Amino acid sequence: MNLDGFEKTCHQLKRPLLVISGEQGCLTCGYLSMDSFERNGDAAAIVRGVDNFEEMLAAEVQAVSSLGEQLGVRVGMTGAEALELFR
Image 1 (cartoon, rainbow, N blue to C red):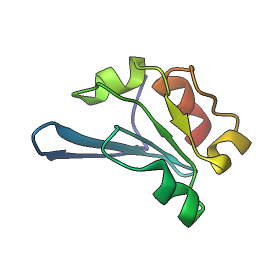
Image 2 (image 1 turned 90 degrees about the vertical axis):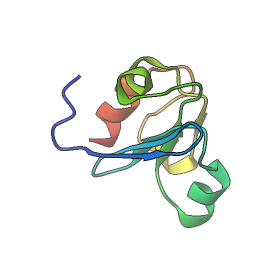
Image 3 (image 1 turned 180 degrees about the vertical axis):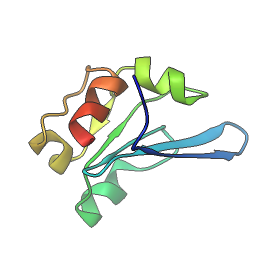
């Protein structure tokens, strides 16, 4: 998947904190809380067990915010599929 047009953020902690943001939502690693996305009304999907952006694209979505679900994102789809809906 081409990530042009997406903002990519990586913070090196004990494990990397990863976020890929599109116009309509973001794909994140498990460091971030779905409760925060829900509370703020943001579209988001979380993947877990990833160490880089390429792994995020292949990983299965484990959690989706309500707004993310409205955009068509579902648990079990790949990170790349979720990002296409957040583009």
